[in-house]
Each structure stands twice: as structure tokens, then as C-alpha cells.
Image 1 (cartoon, rainbow, N blue to C red):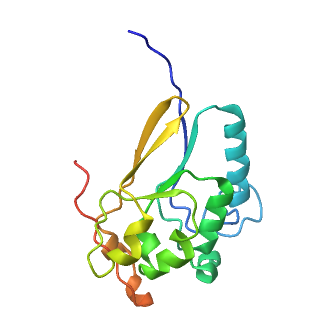
Image 2: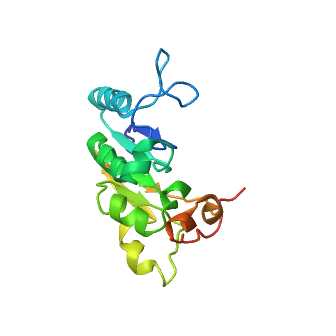
Length: 181
């Protein structure tokens, strides 16, 4: 039996909530250190890790949307733009991605983002499937060096309750099932 060693570095973000600029510990404007978040800080760290490590995947667990004036103005286009610049490999759909309804997710974000968007448990019904189903997948298998790495996306089943698409005249597909306890 031949055994080889394989090291994989996973870079992960979640709940970015349109934090394009750095913030203080309370998610307010950062006027003095320590500062957190922000695209520039993420870009620097991602570049540093990719230069040092061989096998790197950059993943996001959802909720890129909502939370700052950046989202209020750009409606998710800023998330697609910066995720593309940072070179994300995949992301799972979070509940806040549906806050502007399905159409508010497709046009500014799903049509523009370059990474694979995942959700294994969203099954869009016939009223919205034609608008969203081509933009996400249950999983993605990445070829990393000589290895195959599977990544699965999962969206909270409470998304229709946690999201607020009614304000945008939209609706939300209902994620099926839940993770085992």
C-alpha cells in the first residue's frame, strides 16, 4: 500500500455582512486599533497564505449580504465584486442572501460572482426554479493538486423566517431537512 501525505489549507469566512471597510469590535467605524474585518485586511491575509501554502481553498459559509451602507446601496453587487477580486472558490447560500428575494439575489450577485455557489438542501419550487436553479449546486468537487476535495453547501432551514424578502416583494425557497443532531 502506497501512502502519500496531502495537506489542505482552508481559508474560511462567514457572516461578512457587507463589511467592506474595517470595523471596531462593536462593528462600528474603526477610529483606533484594534480594527477588524474589511476587504483590504482579508486580501492581505489571503495573499499571504496563498504565497506560503500549496493547496488552498477559499470558502464562505454565507451571509455576505446585509449590514452596512455598502449593501444598502449596491444590493449585493459589492459582495460579488470583492469575492471575485479575492478569488473565492465556493460559498454556501446564507439566509441573508435572500433578504431582497430571489430576484434580488440573482441579478446583483449570482449572475456576477465567479465562485461556485452551493446549497444541498434548497429545492426551489416551480414558481421560482426557472429564476434561480441554474445558479447554485449541492456540492462541488475541486481538483487540488492530485487530490479531489468535495465541498457541500447547507442553508439554514429557518431561512424563510430569518430572511425578510417581503420588503422586496420577493419570496424565498424553503431549505429542506436539517443536519443530524
